[in-house]
Each structure stands twice: as structure tokens, then as C-alpha cells.
Image 1 (cartoon, protein in one colour):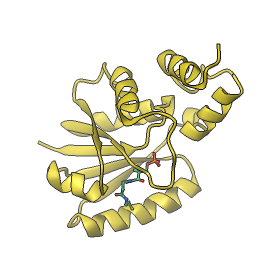
Image 2 (tube, protein in one colour):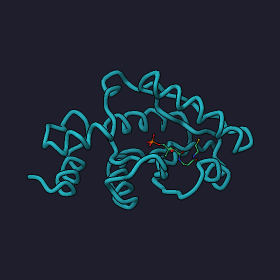
Image 3 (tube, rainbow, N blue to C red):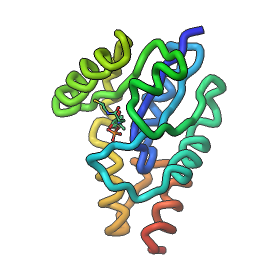
Image 4 (spheres, rainbow, N blue to C red):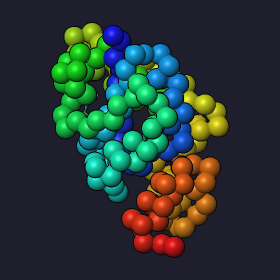
Length: 160
Ligand code: PNS
């Protein structure tokens, strides 16, 4: 059985993430979508909230499992016997950072490879950071996240 992991902060999940998860899920038997801690980011949603939104977002994908992990991605890869890490790449800035992370994660996990999926151009400008900024100004989020995430953002940010 080929298992892969699609890791991220997912604070919150966007339509860009969902498109990548749908495409990645067609390439493997089991895809873990893992909520991990990015030490560079302070999050708006708790790990449980992020997991619940992800579960709703991928409920149409039978071979996708939502998990969270506190620690190095390489440790999760070893623990679950995962064959590949799959990441999305929107632009050259993403590529630079993903290239470095892929090399570090290969060293830390005894050779596990990272596969980079180019984002669909429809979603290449979307990020969770941009989504949170638009939400804070009560802007239109319909092109960026599913309706249940719009609601969660409004509840969290306390706007109507
Ligand atoms: O969605 P993000 O914030 O770009 O995801 C980044 C993430 C969470 C995948 C990355 O920060 C990560 O792998 N964190 C776990 C800790 C780890 O393994 N760090 C070393 C990677 S080089």
C-alpha cells in the first residue's frame, strides 16, 4: 500500500488546498492530510478546529485521512511508514522554500522523497494568510474558501 502525507498549517483550509488534496489523492492508496505546527506562524484556529474544517472539506474523498502531529514531519513519516511527502507549489517563492524543506526532510527521514504539485492557476494567488486578511476586513471570500470556512472565519473574527 502506497501512503503519502500532505502536510500544512491549514489555518484555515482553502480551495487551493482542497484542489491539491483531490489531485494528490488520485496518486496513492492512502493520503494523510496532516496538520503540523509551523513554528514561524501563530494560528487563528486551534488544531481541532483546523482538523474539523479539513474533515468537512475532504468528506468526498474516501482514501484521505485527517490527522495532526506535534513534532518533525520526518518523525511522522517514519511512524506511519509513509512513502512520499506531497506539497503544493504556487510560485517561485514557494519553490525555494519547498526545495530546501524537501532536502532537509529527505536527510531526516532516511531518503523519503517530496513530490511537488504545481497549484492550479485558478488558485495560485490564494493563501490562508490572504484569506484571514480579507476576513478581518469583512471582504468577499467566496472564491477562496468553502462556505463553512467563511462561517467559521466570521464566528472567529466576530463579524456578521
Ligand atoms: O502550510 P505551511 O505553513 O506552509 O506548512 C508548513 C509545514 C507545517 C508543513 C512545515 O512547517 C513543517 O513541516 N512543520 C513541521 C516541523 C518540521 O518538520 N520542520 C522541518 C521541515 S524543514
